[in-house]
Length: 77
Image (tube, rainbow, N blue to C red; front, side):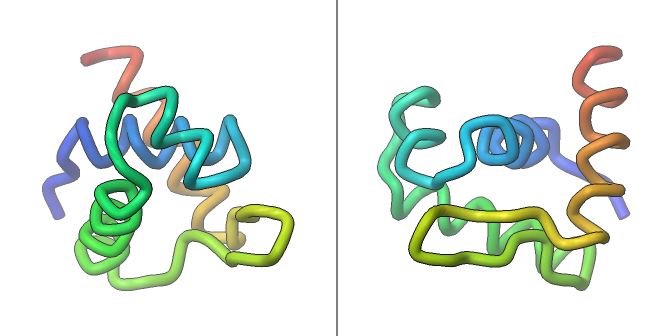
């Protein structure tokens, strides 16, 4: 599937910051917008990418694999 670079960028920032709220602050959008982008990306790749907990988010194994691809795509973009 075609992966939107904006969704990949959001995903990478979430992985880097560890929380949706810190990612939202860094990207200058609301936490709700971040959540929607994650849901869109998870629909495209047809799997869960993040596990949410009271301390933030952790990448699933598939999320970890996607992050490596996302970083390469974003560097090339």
